[in-house]
Image (cartoon, rainbow, N blue to C red; front, side, top):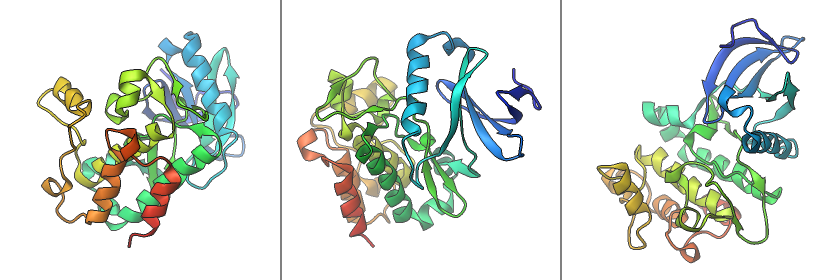
Length: 271
């Protein structure tokens, strides 16, 4: 267990922040007392070569990115044979927390938040990468409304054609059918996950739900299945916004948005 005041790679850890699927997050200060976030692999992952490689690849990708809606990498390396990354400290709450609390910030700034989320994903794609872990936990929102995309541990280089990947990236509920059935990823993998994230933001529910997890998975993989209409959860959502989200969630790729830039285009027409 890491204690407050512990020195790590030239930083002093001040508190535990959170934990993700593969990492622990800590707030720390550098020698100038600037706050940062240190991301460290969980102990049972440190010796896993595949996970280590993915973790460091994500840091390498993040080092090439510079956008106000993408978390900024400060440093990456290995300390006592433990890989770590240091990213900017952001005073913010993640989107999952805001959804669970039904925070007014979401409903007062819905369109602005969606536009910023889309801008972050579109920028990552244009820079030549796929995020592959788009979900509410990986968007943080400052009190002033700035949205920041975090956690690039599963990110990979973007290719001209869909890439077959194994094991499956991300979280089942955020993966489109072609990824779940054929392990294929491309821009639409992130677009579909963006749709699921927005659906949750508006309704507090996932688009495909059932009595059991298996029921949810069957509905998600049913070619004739449709997400529950928004009006059953949120009657105040404009039809144009619902149509945009449902187009991101289309089962068939030909019915889905082909690029995040087109999602952004349609978002810009809304008021």
